[in-house]
Length: 145
Image (cartoon, rainbow, N blue to C red; front, side):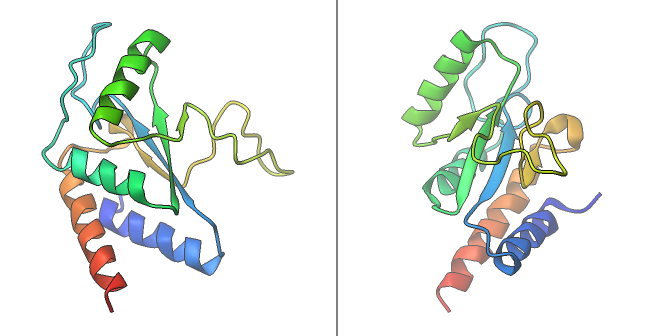
């Protein structure tokens, strides 16, 4: 599996090469943003010390659209979204990407389009936040040149 740092680099290179307006980052709630649990009530704490600052950074970028991915019930998601907003983290969409329409090659009606998926069941670990934080720092330093 490709390291998460390289994945972010590859997607941003593709964004520049293909002149995309934005990158879509779909982020699973449990196991990526907050600790996983098997109860209806969510324990609202960040899973890693870099989670909050990385998500805040993503929220502040004009070229990033954030999609929250979760099977939680609507009442729980409303609490989560309010908690995230109190931490200056704002998702653009929940379990959908209405900006990308079906094409002659792809049907996005059941599976939303995304550029990057952060999902623990797809191999994401909480320590990947360290690499994402490093990628952000290098991206910001390159803007100063």
